[in-house]
Image: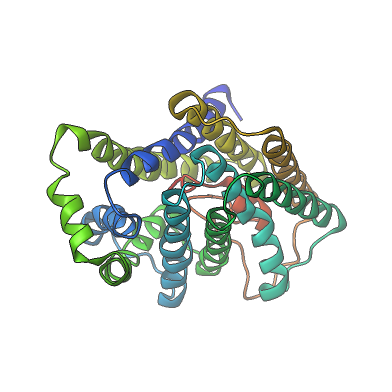
Length: 328
């Protein structure tokens, strides 16, 4: 990669890492389920008007939208709203990488080599360490919610790969059409019309400005700019070259949450984070050395937010913001 392309990859990781702060700011104003519907509706409306629908099977588009868009952010936002730290959220979402490898083997019959299996085991151990360290001083269920978000992201990775989109960014944008209506319906049932109405009626004040700025950041920089740059880089370089830069996302997320919110992860959480990142990087390297055996049903196609579905691990490690939350 040229210096310019390396700078773009680092910029994308920074955009996705800071995006968790933006999500935190938005959750201060809007109920989490309604916020998911709102963020994707803002993208979906111009997408349907201006962007051609990708030529993929409808079931894979819907599957990607449900996995990556709907359920990932449903669980992520619920976990963060329940008090799970912003910085650690960016780390725990990296669990989508080992989840994707395991699901790819179980559902698509992709081969897991010994090196990749070792990387997945190390990452899983890191997640256990993070969970135990966090759960020692706080309820464990917010951590489990964010972990479920990572699992949903992994299912979205498989759907995006099966879609085999010729224009991955179009798939990203059209995926945003799926979440708004079901998430709005769930929000109305769970959070109630009163909470939604109150959040909107009080949102046009100076105190609510950070929430709108955070939402704008998530849509414009975290999703559109970050995904656009990442997909552009993925189209010019092997996935294994670009994907490792995504490991900067939790680093940026933890550091910015520490600086802006005063979140200080404990030694156990940091140690677990090192294991997670190291395991994902090792598994990604192993995937580049011994790629999974292709089958007619599982030809790789770039995942636009994690942006690297050319291998199971690289696909998930790349995101986000996203992320992708970094849609991330």
